[in-house]
Length: 162
Image (cartoon, rainbow, N blue to C red):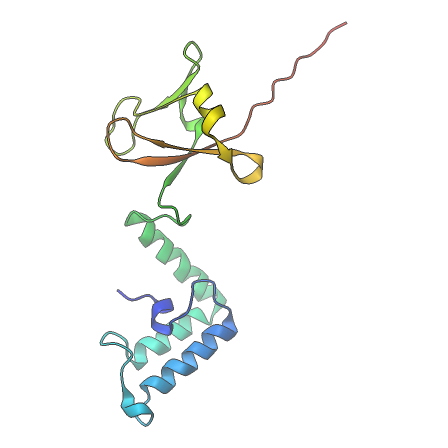
């Protein structure tokens, strides 16, 4: 299925003026009196162009449409971050204080402790994330699933008592 953005040939973050210009251009390209009424493609006709413009030019309809598109992409295995990785917080992992290790069963293959991260691994391989946090990528030990794992550093405070 072709998205409204593809119908008009605009990007997801296009401004209203860019959408209007693309709409006008598409109408001219498909108008029967202009250029012989050539269709942009077999699946795109004047009705598809008008519907795309109606939705994308209305902020409320566009917002709802974007949510629906995002939901379809997620259910198809695509995520909005663009890196294709599911994101989990380290808070969703179990912590074994004796091993200093965080673990979680794999959400895909269900392997017990499919994701196991030692504190040293986190310190050595974590990259800066958003909001002062950190990110580490990890693969399940039993299947090909990779996860983006986010976490914040815990601040330990030593209280002095006099």
